[in-house]
Image (cartoon, rainbow, N blue to C red; front, top):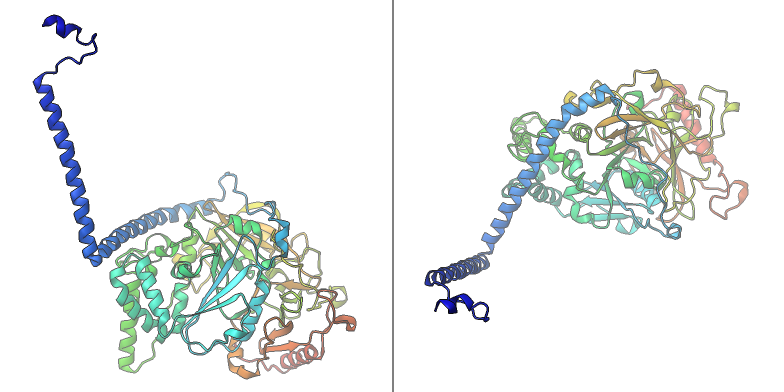
Length: 607
């Protein structure tokens, strides 16, 4: 027997195993099979239960989403809270010897030249979002809409409304109207903000309070500008960028003022009208703040207390250490409005502006790349007359004013200096470049999108402080130190204020630029008439009618209204687009004479 046991392996026969080993293997198999059956039965039971109880399944999913959102918001607030002091110290100490990151460059590879003949840009699309509340549209709405057509190569306008009298047939192809129905704006914002703040159980309350706020104070919609990219996310498929904007403006050709490098490399691009240099104001403008549609810019607004979840501290730059939140803010406004109504008193609550908290949040997020570009005209500092050329009939759109116009000592520098040297406004008229509002606009847009500005020199570290923008709460202010001689120095082209500002990797910089304009003119991407619109509201039907889409037209805007200018080719020719400068006609002469008479007689309408 011993011999058989020792040589069984050599003969190819498995030796006999002890009885204890066999029992151990059997129990192991039974255990594995049992655990597998238990897991399978549990899974089948859970699936059966959820199938019978869809509400329970939805509740489970909502609970999971709320947990993830709450964790995400908590992490974001903690990060922003730790960033604020570090960002302030870095800005105060300058670059600290660290090599600044490069700004957006025009050296990026160009798109396919064949795309230059397309009607839309092959890579990028910008959505300008405008929620409108009210049954009546602004009196200048037709002019605004007509001006939107000039940027159709790159830009669409998305106008959300409840019941405004919209003439859809008269809109250019790049203006989209989205009807939300009666009280639909409050319903849409309520549902989306409840989801985004991780409070779906408060949906009904938020909808009710927002519907009341929007119906009582339509202007309240401005508080939510930073949320537009997330609240209207379902409408942004096919877009690479979005921006909030306003209706009290006219647009030129935005395609000529945004470069491909900025679209590729920046997270946020905002347009200023020169006050960043003259007053040091570094905030996101409500008329144009282009965001890349990405995770980096999504839900930044949650760091603002008045937009955050209930009980949140609104951490970081936006927080005040309180325990309020969006719901708390709305309840307070509603309660105060109710008390005022009971007493027969008027009540207008304080509204938070995107120029405050949200601008501060962006300016204290070191992972962002932000540019404050000097490319807009505003009636605060513009020339007495601003000319608007509507696209159509082969002509390009433009918004422009005469460089160094009488009564405007700074206009030439507020939206960028010409590339060619020009005489200052104090020079004799004989030495100034002729101002022809109908000079040919820039060439047609190309897929390469070179923009109208060129950087001059390197990035220079910039020191910031908080003593500017008095209408903004001090804790939210971000101001450039413009006390140095550089702020008033003329550039190589002889114009002032030719500076752009950058926030890159948590540090601030300034950089010189030159911009291309027709001789004697200053052009802007937009013209914002915040002051002049007060007179426009009173004029109503006296404002000039607007031609149908596709028909070229020109207007002159003043503080009293806007009037048409007849398009007449110089030399009498009416063929060809951009074949030469166009002449003034008697309409312009009449307006000039009226303006001079008003200034002479002191007949100034109150602001």
